Image 1 (cartoon, rainbow over the protein chains, first blue to last red):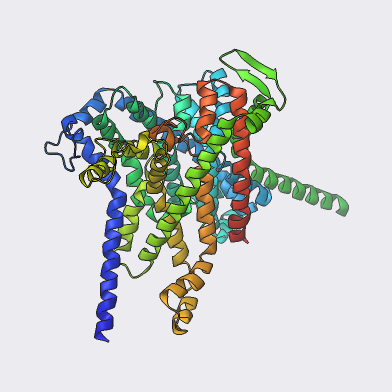
Image 2: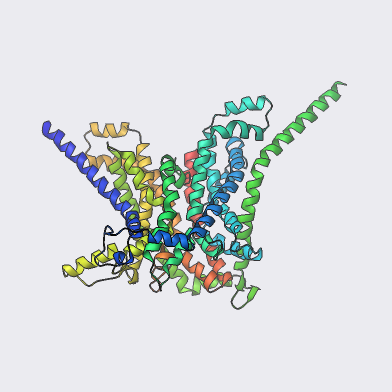
Length: 276
Length: 311
């Protein structure tokens, strides 16, 4: 009996050790990027590779701030936040209507969901043609509008779930008291489902923040977002690893912070309501 | 007199019903308008473009060609089929590895683990990173000389005399695996989370019963757990596959579709046609073929996963 217990404990310890190794392996690329961002050029161009910089430096961060970096950060902030505001404004009433009255039946809600699964390259080809005729290329509205094509579908779908969890009895009281549907939605329902709204908005923000293909096609220099600016570091003539890593480190900070906030909802959000 | 009062009453009732109906519809009008403007109209427009020669370089616009673009893609363009095949290869390899790794790690996390939240939080981080950033990191790490992964492998190879140095990103045969590796790093965490959620929602009684009946660990896993996880597994695989069919950012940044065309996915080939060779008509035709593929897959997903959940 005692031997049995020892064996089981050893098992458990082993599982924990494996888990720690696995977790470190998944974190390694991010840590490596950060470490590269504070290495001097001589330190990242060494063979064999240097693991921890001997002379940590902030020069690459300074370089980013002094060149196009701030403009890209500003563009990403504008595009992502205005897009989220627009997406939430149209998605909240729609999700509410679907959750409460099953408007359009199942077909409408599944049609909305299927929008999310469209191939982005198929959407961007005609959008580019239309936006260039409207002289919108390399402006913020181009991306703000373009990103609604996937974020609205996502937001509606996620919000339906949050509204369905909310008991209708409280709303009925409001309706009896003479509130309109819109009134009930704004005064009764929304304050209570606020956490769900925040979760949805944060996900949409991350999707817009990280998006590359639309931004590559719809921007030039003026409205270029962080991913586009980052991609320009990979020109074959120059290898600016330090600058690139520094900029990437700054760029992934908001999504990483949100990852901690969204932890409980990651499956629900990223599996687009497939699994709850 | 009585009839008149009734008429007034029913008229009011009818008016109220109409108002309610309008109020309900007004909730979905904004979203319908927006989706119409941003996806439906553009997609109809691109369907129209796909039936024409629309070549910005030769400045031939809207020259009707019927199904010619589709015919060329399906029956003449080996590069189209090559890029589709490359996409499928990357997809099958990446999703299989992600699934096996994800299931393994999810099973490790399922037991009595100290600090499970700590592990799951840290493991979730790669999915939040922009694919552009993932690709750039792996581009650095896979550099033939100074990259921590490729450089270290080369050091070991030459040190132990096991083989010649190689450059994974510049090697026709290996470059695909660089894309797979990056995708695996980024998306295995999602697999872990979906499968762990599936495991945690499993009822415990069948597991108990299997244990009481003297089933071993392996038997319990194979005959009891796996069947109960079937829907979660199916959903996770299909979801990832739908995503990976559309893959663009990772190979575009990591290898630019090269070396040669070794990592040229269907989305990259469409992109090149539309925005480098400026053959919009042909690009839109191919994008419609890709759309058909994703619509079929997502319909299967919605029918079998989402609707079954709803029912």
